[in-house]
Length: 125
Figure 1 (cartoon, helix red, strand yellow):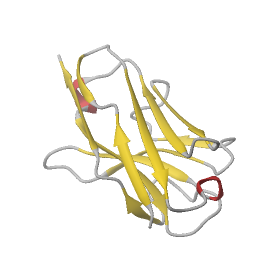
Figure 2 (tube, one colour):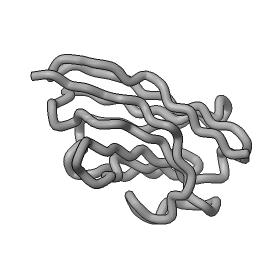
Figure 3 (cartoon, helix red, strand yellow):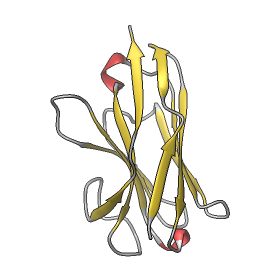
Figure 4 (cartoon, one colour):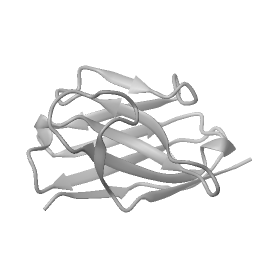
């Protein structure tokens, strides 16, 4: 079955960096768009970034553009999110996700149906 396992979260001070990873299994990883999402307490889930199956096309929420970088290693079936210049407002549970169907991405919150358990990111001021 589809499995998505995030890691790399933690606590950092504002201005710091973290790199999240998402190890996947149970499906043909290179066929699917992948995404990172986050949810802070009391807030709705927010799409952070998506990446096309081959890695050549990416999309970002305005709130993270220029600070976060999504990437993937199709040989290792792993998704990454490099987060720099972190701000307290980046504090949230971060999830990787896969759409229901293979193929290109259709937006930051379109068609994602499989989710990992999440990894907590806490940024202090």
